[in-house]
Image (cartoon, rainbow, N blue to C red; front, side, top):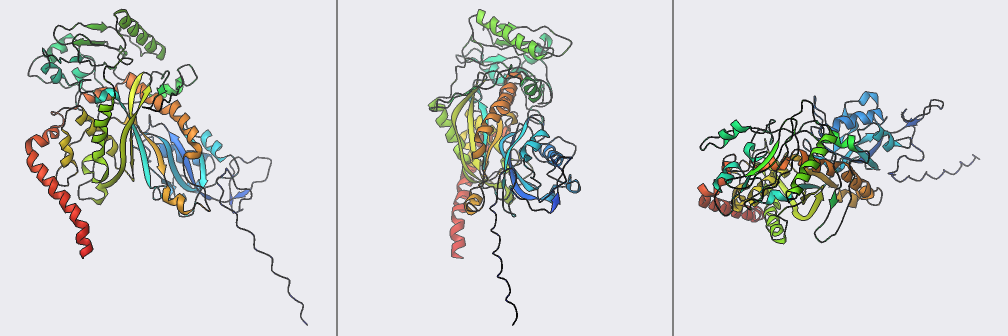
Length: 568
């Protein structure tokens, strides 16, 4: 009789997908020398499909997507992954080989507080995130990673993206930083405007929003600028790589929330880091509507003086900064700013950054939110991007919400927190949406322009707001997390919310405040919002009735389309 065969052994239980720094017993299939002890034998590890959650400040970078010859976030991140041992030598500079994907593609200068990238990496041995951060610049931080399914893609599985644009409150004031012609036209009236020599006398629409660096007009140039009927175009400084004034105390306040957050001061060891995030440029001067109430803040430039004067018989307050052959050091800049503040206090005035007559009241908030609501829903945004035609299906995007309910105070400047949530966005789309909304709030364009802005047969030139105030706030994977909740951890920023907030306070917010103090990025841009630079602002005046009829017909066709499809 044949001997009975032994009973089969029970199968090994399947290990759950882990999202920690390493698995207890990695499967030995590949080698990874990262973090290996020279005295110990090399251990074999297996690649893991993971999603990495990270944040970065976009200052000094040409956007997220890798671009040959340009410094990008993706380029630095790929190299850091190789240096950390997550990518082998054979796959270096070949992201497609390890299934690289990003959840959002931010523009030049745009930051992110919760970006997500995915791929197959060697995350073992323990300490992968620490090794990765050691190879990254301080303004790029990885918070952690999550094990995901083999088919996961950060780009395809992201349901929604939330962006936040911090817009200075004064940008919504029609009398703040007006155009030169608007100042001259108001002379002698009850609502006489003040002119800001540092801003409005050289505020013109130029390529790439800011254009080239300008200078303060001298006495001869002033005569030319004030000559009736003549147009002089002077360009501005583009956001480049240079030193910036470190951001001082910054607080955040919500309307009804009562939240107060202290941001790092210039003496906490981050001065060198903040200096790398800013760039040189012109100062800015506040605009007041009342005659005789012109405030100025002397923010010194390399060889200029900041002068804010009024039209007609309005008193002139001047703060002159001596020319220097060498560039200003941060200490010198802060000293000059303090001197300018002291001069204003002696004259019985306060700094315009600390005193604003215009406020984000309930009435202003209601109007601004009503304007932003025009973007909500499925629209054809071909006028709010570049290189995308109206007939292209990619021009249609779905905006879930667009609100501006909170005021944030950064280094003495009040910002409105504009929060937009959508499935996906095109190049410059958010900045153009904000740009047109600001133009309508400042009465540069009528609100009825939205009746034609989304029509396929109409092409409008829409202003693009500066990139410095925009950052990616969150990438959401709702459908994926719901489907795989039993076997995989959720891909979310929630476990790292505290770290993300600290990163914003340390890098993103100080950079935004420093750019407004030093460059006056938004202030300079506001001077270009006029019908000369954007003739389409008057589109409704020339073809208003025809445009409204066409908009109604197009909306009726879109409503009837579903019923026609059902009947077929």
